[in-house]
Image (cartoon, rainbow, N blue to C red; front, side, top):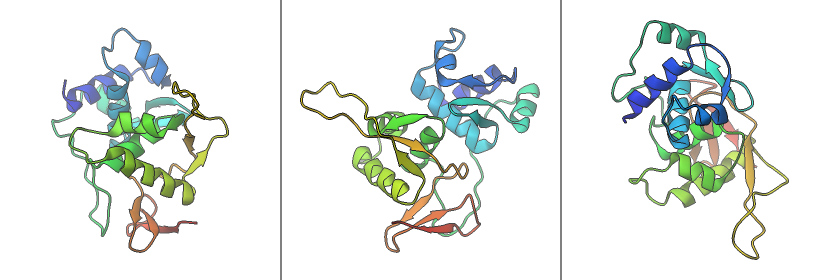
Length: 198
């Protein structure tokens, strides 16, 4: 099933307007979708402005989303979202954009959770890429590290670090400029608000 069909299915499933969690969607027998498909579709609908997070881990359609569902909208193949072109602006379907989408609709998460949700076969070294991205997001104040680690099945392991997004500024993934050691956030200004890392 293509991303456009999955996104369309989720859009129309939520047209009732009630807030639903990923666990509720995951257990709904009317939706034969994997959790990763839910996360990708929810991230895409959020980028389009059709879906919003009402409270932690609970999502419902925006006014635009309800209107689109009522009009029987079918998400086109490719599902392009127009993003203004600015210097160093984020790419729509980059690994880090998909990771940002996954963080926005997750509660607590580990690096492995985000890699599983965001990585595609064509991505090069997704784990090391996202490990660096989580580190700079934390340093720039977008993430917090939770005190309790996720358990590991490996003997003698202390577990995995858990994160939570605490600065959700919008649908576009903040862009890390390695040359200037700055985070650019195009959700806040057209040229990207500059956030220096600590």
